Length: 148
Image (tube, rainbow, N blue to C red; front, side):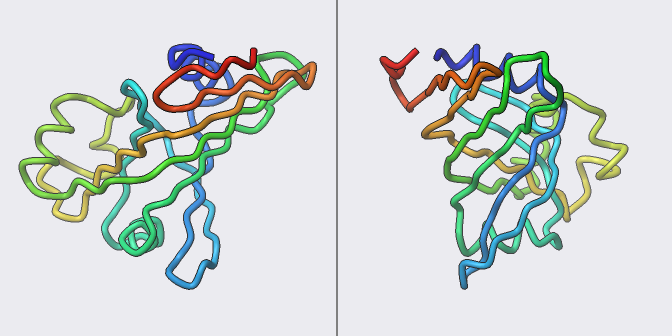
């Protein structure tokens, strides 16, 4: 599977995904996020006061899940990676202006000047699309899996 196919499948399934993180003790946490995509990465934003942020500070491993929504569509998508946090004033402004997220961030975060705003880039290392016919397609960084 190519990266563009992964992004297309994610967008067909839902405009949100479920993010899984874990705290320092390994306790899991799952929360919905509205992602954006750049080559090889899934982006989202959160507040510095959130459980997501606190977990990512101590454990940058992430998982994403786009569940099957109906009998039609590309199937179910899961992806795993490592998060990097961007919260400096310069980073916030650069990423806000680059529109890495596909929605009006001011509705959730007010403005780019919100010091609580954190952008998160999850570099995806592996993803699996399980089709409606139970056929599995895998994407592995940085090369394509031979399994189709």
